Image 1 (cartoon, rainbow, N blue to C red):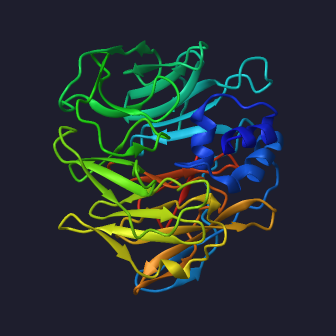
Image 2: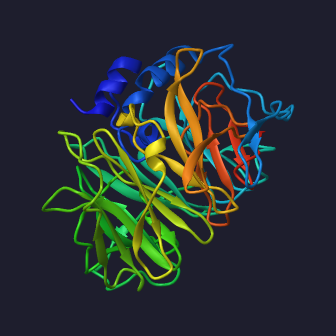
Length: 405
């Protein structure tokens, strides 16, 4: 039984074939420590859970306790859990909730909602869809891998009007690279691993790339990372199983692969996926082993350099994986899984300072949040699995609650 299947059997009695919840729960891997959290949140949508107030990390120093940030009056929690949330920028926000929380329809059927004004107003986008994966490619462009109900096969669809209407993408001949106006997509018709495609949402076409990267791709997100003029694909070495990353500087025409050979030894069941953390000028990768994590920074001359100091962050609960983020000032922040006073799992944050990592509190952000994401223009966001709120930040240190429609 996979972690995803076990989680859903614990939380909702039967496992739906969708990555919407799984992708948020495990956020690039199958995050074991969220089992109790999501089971409780899904079954009870807990009222009165402790929300952890924060402090502000002062530049060049350690954290200093500050009172929690005031939350907007409109940021009231919903009783219907958010199953997925993604943003293109601070204005264009999307989320999905189960279309039938009363279980009168399959758990894989979701209602997409969107906001074009930073969460001040929200609207339903189209009819509910039976979806396996969902991603935001542009302000008004969404991609969805939808279930067909036939032998576990899926179709890739696109919306260019913010999720109001969808069209099936039709397969075209193999292409050498991803042209302007198209996006790279990692998608599988069924099963895993995925294949790299060039997708033109406007024309409604998808074409496989002729040269596929020489690794086994991690298939937990439709859209590969795009940073510093390159396409980045996470995965593992097909021979050794060690964590690896592939990069293309020519739109997918050619690929180079780096294997993290000195990463900590993997668990017996195999390596967990690596985790990217991107800043405007800096990129980090976190690899997770059986009893240790390692952090690597991408250097200006195109190398992955191991970062010292990460060993100070406790590594006794690495089944959670290795999420992290980069603040606007370039500081790398690691997440440690800790049990909260409520009994649920949450995060403790550690910021890289003076050659090591030190505990830090993020003002206005509760500990019970999913991994922090970054839009291409640098806005940071996440959502809480207890209070069902979205949170956003321009610098990574001070956070504000956003109304989740």
